[in-house]
Image (cartoon, rainbow, N blue to C red; front, side, top):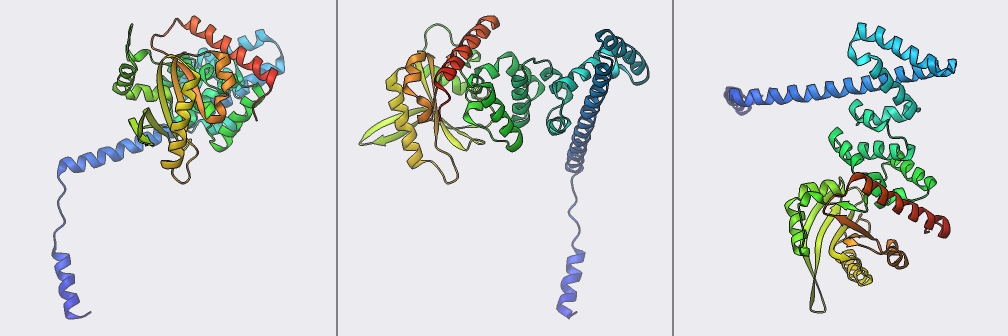
Length: 361
């Protein structure tokens, strides 16, 4: 080593280490502990979830072998008394019935193994009591993809999200295919994302209001509006101006959906949807496609939010081919049974039309 290198080495070793403030060090260690706790809790939850499924499957097989309903009730009750005495309330009769229902609702272990990475046992307890298998799979997969909390899942179910999606209006076989693609490839489609109607009761709008009032209210409550739109929407612009032949046009709201990789225009209408609205929004979409669409993105889409729409008018315009989704919005939430009846009527009409005309190519 040369004399110069020796001097540099001595100087370097002589520089004292920078002292870390006790408060800063404590915060760093606190974060390390929190991360470790979360990892441990996640691992424990995943392990318990598969255990609960295995217990439910074992009980299910035992009951099936006997083929007697009274035997099933007796064995669950007896097991609950024995196991809760040894392992606590988490294995009492009520808990065992949850596990039994879990195994019945999700008979394939591979699907459970995938879902347990994102869903907690509290998620599963809400999903397994949904009777419709397609609806149950929809909530399970969307919860996995969008990372819903248990509270958000409850809100989505209570708000009848599935019945409000375009997906639910398709024939059962097409629904199965889209859900299978979502499960296998995380492939999210507009029919899984777009809804009708959108529930905007959180805006607090009463009596008369203008389109600008509606737009301002949505921006004030942008976090809740994004939650209603669905995970993946990012706000881009309000009243985005475009100029064509010297004329200015303004898009109400512009979003970008990260998973769909598309720009999404949201146009607000106080009254019923009119055929002229299609031409206006098609202009916006073509401008965005030519001037704003980035490499790797899919063509832009639009949601026209209106106070009402006439079914035949919407059908004849064939808006899906233009990438336009027309949906009603509700600023006052009706009683749940009224909403349920309305949605079920819409589903029945849409499915009858599909059976008559066949799905669009």
